[in-house]
Image 1: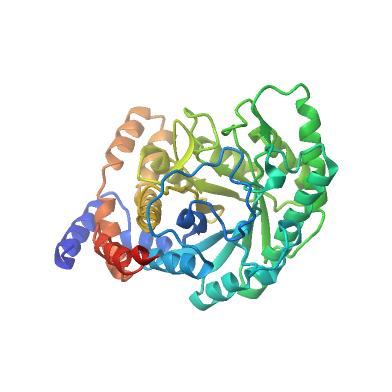
Image 2: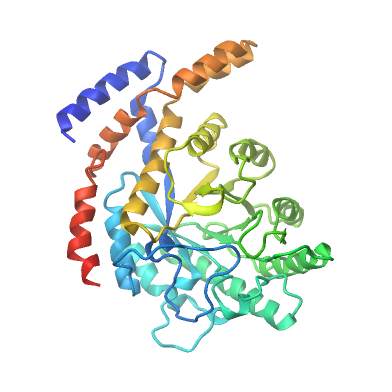
Length: 426
């Protein structure tokens, strides 16, 4: 895009927002401080680097076979570098435990150590990136029947308890070495295809496993834990052990035990297709110090399509802004599409997330709240409708140029060149 045209559109947008009392420069300063954690698993369709076998499980399914899929940690990191180079603002890198680099060592997930992730730590340190982390309780022979931390077989359950324990220690070590707080998310695929006869049994086992895992304490400046619910998945359509209600209750239970920092994770695809998570944010923030949100795009089910600037994402960010809670909501993307260029998927999804954040920051929220406080709900609705169409994109394009990255769709030629020079040769 022509920088002169971008600047003209930006200046016009600044004037438009100023007419509503919005300081665009102040909003951009806030935008620069909001981090979005980029998920590594879009880069290789949730394959991981272990080569342990077993396939995915628990409703996780990535489709497509676009060329140039990375085969090593170095190739995956190079692809992430390329995607990050096309994004303005601040990012983190969200890593799954299945991206351990074992170098031929015969070690399973229950015995992973920090050294198996040293390449990721060194890479992040060299780029000034913070890391987040996740246990990988799927894609493993010990998860073949979609039960892990709630498995009635003590041997299998012990394997996964030890895995999540190891992951928490690694996450704390990452935080210590990088000088940041690592958000460690715990999600398990546990559930059943058909109706169980004893739902309580499995949930009691999950609670006991989590109690043991979280009994080990780490400094909060290095590690924050989160627990993630889900409605259903492929193979677990009838019963999910770790439901939303389970984890809401479990977080309250942990808070009473003194673990007040335990977060709840809201994934945009983990609820009923007609249910939006935007309405949940303000409720949870009344009783929790913060929440973790996985930004995704479900289509009919939790299919983790690439995020676009659709209404659900826009409404989520508006709600966070209206609650003045961007400092209490951790944002992380979570989607995977192997049917298209994976770097393009990252770039589109992260930029869409950022556009929604910026549009929310630019919303003249005070005017909407004033109308509501005065009982003038007609004006409230009218303003909400008008503000949906303010020129936030013009501001985002200038933000991109100011941050030294392409505006509009100008990032596509760079991806085409990388595809030709790098991906096509794999």
